Image 1 (cartoon, rainbow, N blue to C red):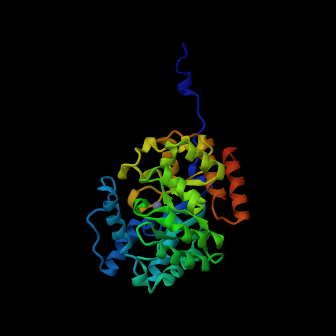
Image 2 (cartoon, rainbow, N blue to C red):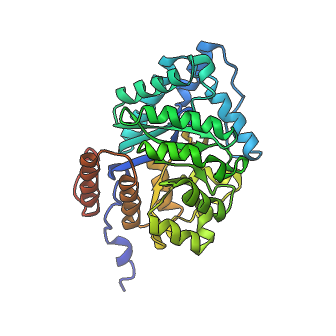
Image 3 (cartoon, rainbow, N blue to C red):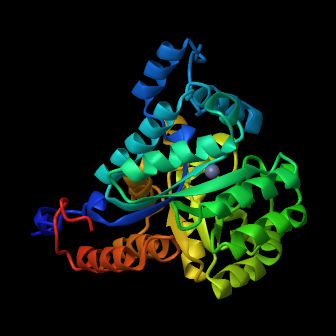
Length: 344
Ligand SMILES: [Zn+2]
């Protein structure tokens, strides 16, 4: 009688997900604030914070936006901006990030920081000081006029090759029509910037498709509604448009339950997936934690997690040599070689 054998056989320890090299492609400036820094900056600048930033029971997008605006309000100087970027990169470095793309809509900061350009330059100064190589994505908002997006795309284009790597549209994608933003994305594309609009969070696959066909999206922020439509999946797969999937962003807003985030289906359809944290201040989970949830809640295998890591690296703006080094470290992670200190 030996039915305990299976239980006593030593199993290999799970691979350390912090040691898997990652490109982090979807992180918002204010959403990356460390809770301690939020409290410290609020006290310094006399900003009253809401009693709780708990995102677990949100009243739709408006409830989320209120919390995000509260976080953003504590960032009032160029030094604050630099600090937030440097701290975000440090947190990601500890999670095995080898390349970070941080996104900012300079519009709301511009009045206190001396304008759109001054805001962008503060973010770029932080990126230059960061412990992880960091590119900046300038975003406008779906809720602002297309002319404003064109202005910001023009600003982003001026800094292409000088730290800005992409242009996107954030906020609630139900607020604007993709076709209206085509001129802004043309400016960004002509400057060689990655085009990374948010889409397919509240909107359906048609909106995702429009962002690819009309805006030339290289990646989509979220885009998970595409999983409902085989034709849209085919389009994303054939053009290798990556979806930036942020597992903890969906349950509080009623988009997906955690276990239903469709990463496995996207991968099976050949759609590149980059896992990201979006707003760790509000959703409470950092980059490595998102990968952990992909393993524990979504049941992704280590091979699938490595595919996600490779997809993120390949669809990032990371310099070629850095990307190659990170990809070879992913291979070594799969082969079981390396340590937590060896993260590319
Ligand atoms: Zn986002």
